[in-house]
Amino acid sequence: MPRLHPSVALIAHLSGRAPRYGCASPDGRYQAVALGGDTLIVDLQERRMHRAPGVYPRGFEDATPDGATGITLRVEGEETATAYLPAWTDLQWIALEHTTGDFWTPWPDPRTAGLPPIDETLPAEWTSEAPQATERMRRSVGDWVAWFVALAVLAFFAVFGFNAMTWALAGGWQWLWMVVGLPVFATFSVLTVVFVVTSLRERRRVRVALGGMSLERGEGFRIGEPFDVRLLATVPEAQGGERTVAPERIAVRLIRRSVRSEADGRWAVVDECCDEAIAVRDDTTRAGRVLYACELRARPTPDEAPSQWTVELRETAAPNGTPFVVAGLRLLAAR
Image (cartoon, rainbow, N blue to C red; front, top):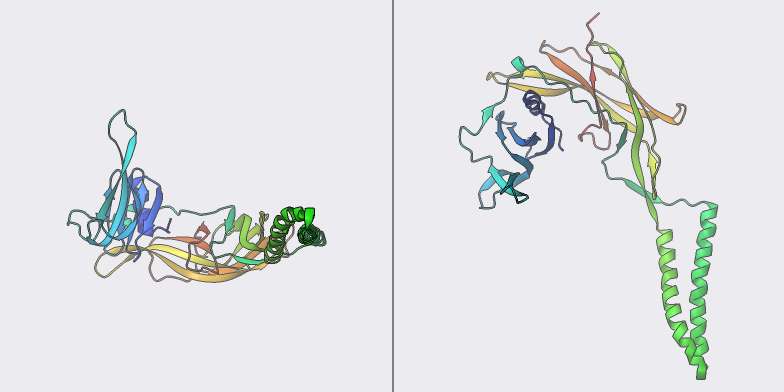
């Protein structure tokens, strides 16, 4: 599910429902999420919303089946034909660029409703969503011995088949060796070549992941004063055919969510990055744990609007992707 716009999270909070499956249009203007048994559609550009009852979002398309162009949301509804027949599903298309005036309703005003609570993301394990690298398999002495034994067995049967075909050239009853030698030589010679090529070119995935994550952010922070963020984690055990490693660096961002008023009298809930740092991996900790630590500082803001503060952790390979850790911060009074 794409990351929800802050205003979408506010609307979901006021409805008393937790957003589930969601999707976003290719141009990023529209978002649709499932709230209970309904679908909430929001227009981020015009700051309006629509609630479609009894349907679930399935994705955005560029046109409707009847040929109408424009951003269209495909939804799926569930109905029951009779009391004796099972439920059946039907697909519907909502053309968002060809709606009437009463289709949309304005967003709720957060200046009176208040900001929604922070949706923290504190997983115990994480695996990078970036494309994983591969490397050649590293074998031990025992693995090489087993490899040579297997190669010797395959080569023995291939040589045996070749010799059997040569014995058949003597003529007479020796031609019966051709019945055995030809299939044995053909089969095991191919198996020998395939075994050598595949085993020498065998590669394994290098999975970038963390396990047992624990984020230390202190009891709070003050505007203009530095505070430390520490992430302790372990490298999870590798599965078959892979090797796991911890990322070298992690991007840490300090995010401020607030209500911003504009000149036309409208408002917007915005997320602003107030500071960013790169935490480098430290392997010197005990018990096989890795440590990522950095220092952040919140800059003073000219406005006094109510705000919420969070710290986000992202992988440096995908800095614009979804953060894998989102933790709330408590703002302390100035000294």
